[in-house]
Image (cartoon, rainbow, N blue to C red; front, top):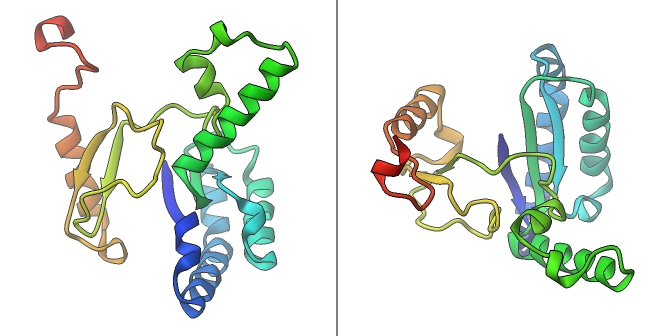
Length: 187
C-alpha cells in the first residue's frame, strides 16, 4: 500500500502549512510505530527523503529500520515525491549504465525501466483511491499506474474511514481487469 503522503509540489504551500504537515508526519510515525510493528507491517519510503527537515527525516528512517524485518503488509510512504522526477532519475541511471557498457540501448524495455524506478521492489498498484473528488492523479506513480483501477470519492482524506475503504474494495472487485484485452480473452 502506497500513501501519497507529501508531494514535491507540496513544498510550494505556505511555510506554516508545510511545517504543520512535517510535524504531523513525525507525530503520526511516533504514535503508530508500535502498532505497525505489532501488525508485522514493513515500512519503506520513496521520493526525495533527504529534502525533509531533520526530525521527520530521522523519524521516517528510524521507523523504516525498526520495521525492516517485518514480513506482512508493505506500507510505502511517498514523501517529497514526484512521478515525473522518478522517471527522470531512472532515465539518468539507465543512461549511466549504458555509458558504462552495463546495458545496451536495445536492452531497454518496460521491464528494465521498471527495475530502475524507486518502486522496483513492489508490484504496480491494482487500485488507486483518490479522495476529495479530484479528477487527477497529481504526479503520483505515473509509470506504475498504467493499468491501475481508479476509485474516486468526494470524501476528504481525513474523513475516509474503514467503511469507505471497503466500498472502494467492493467497487474494485466488481470490475473486469483486461489489461488491453477483450472480455473473451480473459476466460
